Length: 171
Image (cartoon, one colour):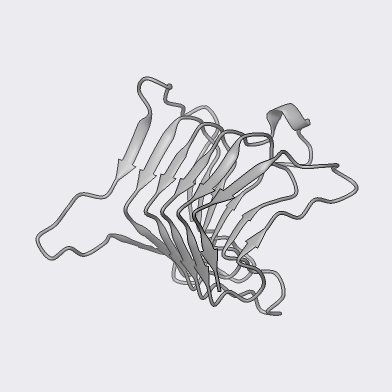
């Protein structure tokens, strides 16, 4: 997998950017994890991820997990991963104030994600341990094993922050 650890932060004025370059064939770069490990995990703050695909994370592993704050995830395609395609979540060991907050997932597509039991893999998720201000805008989820969007909270960790889903569809 690919992990961007805590502390590798941009700023509001100068976010760190991982953006696909335009190419003559109009092909999207693909991060193919070949079913052997985690997908991509972003623990840092003020990043922009744009224009590439994440696919084939191992069984029970997410395609892309956002665990930092103030990140923009745009035009990412997540498909055929071993669990949820794109998920915002933190650690149950952290207090609510440290859970991922103020992330924008925009114009992303998540499809054909499935865990081995066909009961857990969502297209998109903001669940278990998320703070305030997370938004999904213009996203499409289809043909995933479980839900298009999952906003599950556990009694043990308490309520999650408010999540906005707008201009989006699941089928």
